[in-house]
Image (cartoon, rainbow, N blue to C red; front, side, top):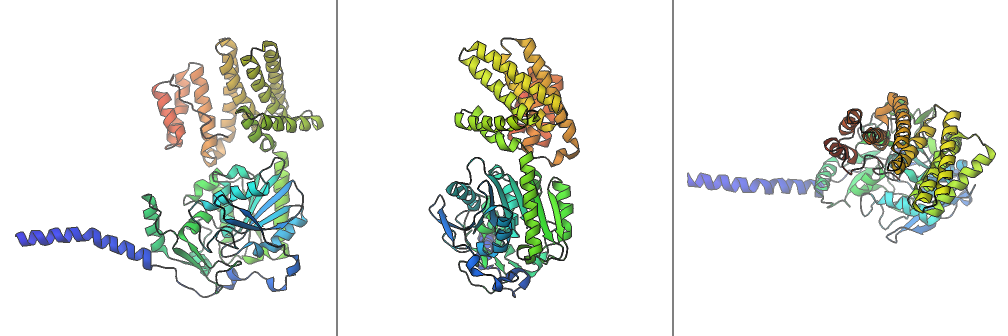
Length: 534
């Protein structure tokens, strides 16, 4: 009996070692296999006939770690910039024809090579950590001056680069660009648009990916420099080709695992275009996917064109350039994108940013005195200025600015009563001003708060048909403002349904945890809005 007990004990002790050994073996030995070359993904049509003298030389800037980020510059309008991203295994040179078409349409094009490609970074096919490409994009914009005011910025990418566009458009850096365009994008491993093995273009070491993902889930970023993807090319690693990707490069270049949520978060003007005869993706599924998860994204399918045709065929590159022009036109009409970041920074104390925003508003109203959104933003700014004046005991100036601000907001709403853009500016401005005057004039404060409630309820009702597709931040701000307003009015019965909705719809977010605290104690000093704002 003792012998049997010892055997069982030894066996039990050996099981974890066996599991660990098997796990380690998967990581070490499960490399992506080489596969036959696939022309549909490997060779850009017509590249052998390109006039090499027309291809700009490689330029470089430094990332935060000092590593080079390479790009090719196609000069155009200074106020219209495009950052252009290549597809899997490629580099900036592969996007030459696309860059020329965009340049001809007026854009200044920065055709970049992502880290791990085209001489960017330090190692072909690898990054130092998963989110390094996201950081590189921010560094690139700063180093080239693309983050300056007055520049309309569009991020355009092809194939896996299109996936990087989707990742950025729905991620924490989405405010860095004014518009997005994805050409034949990789949406997700389990997306309806994705063919098995990428139509023969991709060899995946899936067991290794799973094992590394498990380690990563435990906070152990071990062995992430090992290759997990190999492409169907005979090309060797060099400054124009990257035949294999490490785990961290693969993860960092593509949309997050929950790509559906990422698509839903896209809130900037965006378009998707693909060829109907795409060999790597199911082009017929792009429209249904975006219609379901973010119908605001425009989708175009070009007949008769394959995957690589989309960056080489003149019909395709012209279509991409035309879409880009439409996106820049949409931006010109979307006034809030021109001023809101500077205005919010001004509210936080950045006087130069505030003055820039006010200059844009003034120039707009000088040409179009009835521009409703410009009037709304000026009204909000004047209410903010009145608060500053009151704080400095400039009572006369404060009253004048408050009256002018209220007049602007009223006129803006009269001119465009059904504009969400106008209501979305007026409502929070009224809420903030009402908070400031509550201690001195409760009646006026309650009147303004009720007016803000009407605005927020208008926004909620108008957006109800596509409510579930809105970004969590947008939903949280509207529901949180309504709950906060009713709590300020002392009506918990009307506030509680909004608090309940926040807990259910935004579970796991700061909105939900704060709503739970306010549900328990309506007077708790816990904010319900501006959680992750500007």
